[in-house]
Image 1 (cartoon, rainbow, N blue to C red):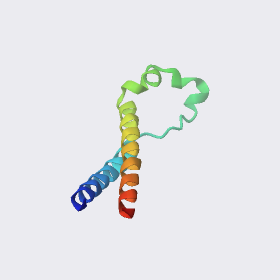
Image 2: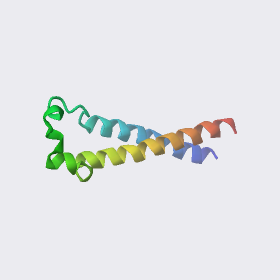
Image 3: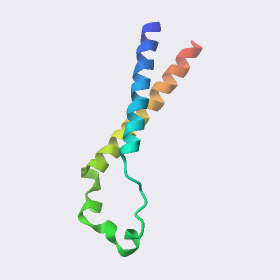
Image 4: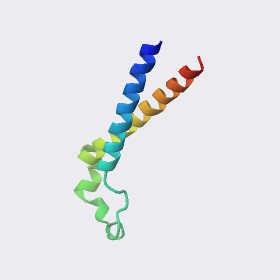
Length: 80
């Protein structure tokens, strides 16, 4: 049991570091004055899911889900 907890803790720390880096790599969500003029409807605005920014958002969602799951498992494991 101690080996599994150690492995999960190491994976948890790696996920924390990766999550921090990926969040810092993302652009801000505020469109500024471009949203007023309709600049968000450009090619890049419509295809954001296929761009690097879209990929970073997807990776962030997966890492956050893993973060929550592993945090819960480690927390439950400390009571057993």
